[in-house]
Image (cartoon, rainbow, N blue to C red; front, side):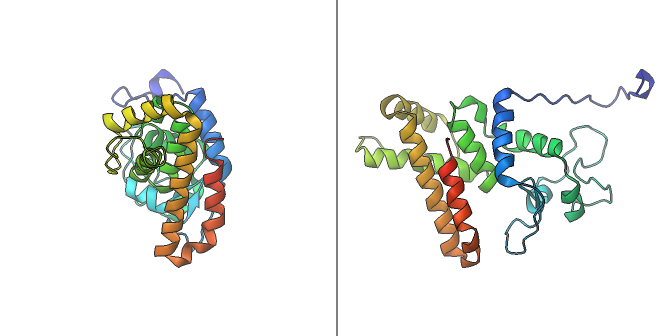
Length: 215
């Protein structure tokens, strides 16, 4: 490419990845794996853990400003299973950073709290990951008989949730937060299976995933 090939009206997009994000991404990629199309999986076809349902819901992401949806990879006018198959690891790295790590501001949380939030945001959505943290903190409040009002479980990590997290990290340590978050995640997985028994085949893997959180 020469300078004559560059269109000055279009933005030049530079993707920067921190070492911390790259470690979290590598760990997540080891869990999510490659292309899978299981009819029982609620997300549909997935590649590197990115589901067709998610990619369609994100819609017309156009980071490079070329007027085309970045993940209509075959440029046939829609986002479908063919596009999922063509996703690259770099695509996944960008999507995970922009749609999960950044949106939940995972890098602003201490390790491994941010990494646990990231894992569960990818697995169940941003709101679900945030609610799990709030439920975990409320469980500590109950178990430690700490005299304070339970957090509202609204899926929004605001000042109150962050203040409670900081307080409990100082009082009870990282291990207590990690253990409570794992249990909240397991409770969520069991609830999914109770409401949809067809998902029971995934439960063992999900519980193993929960046990790896924070490690």
